Image 1: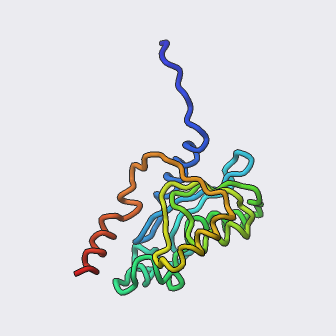
Image 2: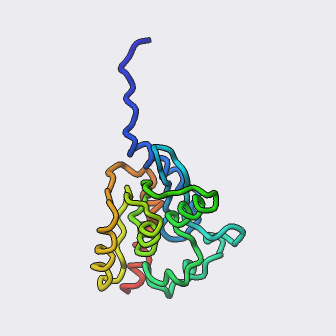
Image 3: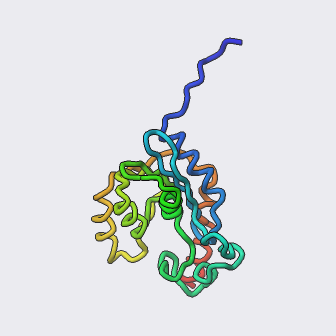
Length: 181
């Protein structure tokens, strides 16, 4: 049967779709993120956020920071035992001896301050991301933006079918309302 030819998605759309699929393994009470590293038009590593291998998952109470209602959203990362998706992708590549120098990272969230430093150190020159992330302390936003100028950042516009689940908007909005009261 003849029909309209099927146009394959762009490579950005293809890779971001895979990052969204990887994110489904995320085990965090906060934002859920998926990431992958592409080099030479091949996926060399993936990662999602959650506790280190062999530890109790965040959703099962493994991370006291995430379970605490006393720590303000966007702070206390040094108390969190979860590994970010970008970190997990970099660490997986390193564990298997795969160089990521010159690669592109696709991630469902703009990398945080720490992940940006690690991407720079690993010589990953480009990051394509889906959702914005901003440092919770405006005093550090300028430093964060200066650091990110060292990487080619590109926000990719596509519909995220699980945006509310991944960004936990309902939970964050409820916590925000509780904090205001």
